[in-house]
Length: 268
Image 1 (cartoon, helix red, strand yellow):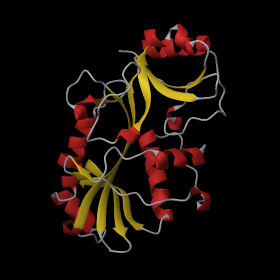
Image 2 (image 1 turned 180 degrees about the vertical axis):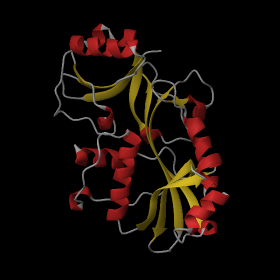
Image 3 (image 1 turned 120 degrees about the vertical axis):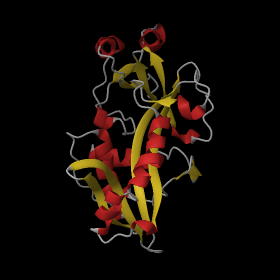
């Protein structure tokens, strides 16, 4: 499972390339997992924090960067006002890079006109535009606040010499009935599945396939066959319970020819 999480993380594309929205995308170094002895990742923490462990181990394994700090809380008195994800030093140039790490799953709602506003979490509570603005307007400036400068100087790091970047990886899901939604300037390689509503899932088209509902820790994993597949009727009962709780599950679907699709069933 651990190796699958690393493979899933590394194979998830960045949501944009180079610079967009005033944010430079982190250029992730090439990692050979065959030469990499991974350490266990805590499974009782949020998926985003699990991805931080994956990022940390990958960067430590690479020859390109050195991690100067990770997860540094910034305090105002006794109150934590933010946290710095990573400060890296590029080995070849000695350049200091502040990396904000984000790993997201977004559905695309084509009823919204602006592409960057179309991306939202499967439960419609997590918006890409809001997260992007927070990185740019809050998390990057935090390092140059009085409290940020003080915290970094305590680690012998000069905040004036830091370049801000985001490692923003995402899996995108288009509507089942409209998989050709334009999303530029975002990276179309991030489209890895689709989403649909319960009534669409409860149709003849889906009944001859088998299904698996992955745990949240498996969401980043590339779908594979080594899981306990169940019938459409069995998965329908579980999905219906999720709908009542206003929770949109991810589902892996294996077709008779062996092809595996990945999608969300939404409750709204």
